Image 1: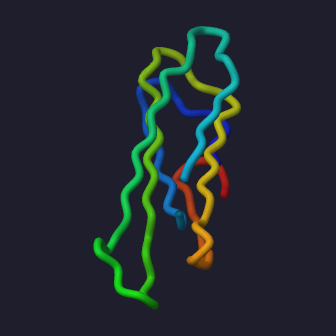
Image 2 (image 1 turned 60 degrees about the vertical axis):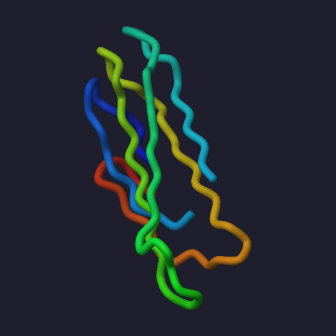
Length: 89
């Protein structure tokens, strides 16, 4: 997803579906990254669309570089589309 998460900033990733977040060590400080995930609608009806929203926040004083987010689609679902407010999908 995003390559750099600026210090004290968040970015939004809207995607379908368990997650992994990783960042390369920053020269100025250790990254302090957090991620939250929510789904909507909740509950979702069988055959209906479900949107997962992931928000990654950098609470450290320096930028976090080399950040990637992996969100695996559950086997009983199909992938529709993904978008990000920063970086690429």
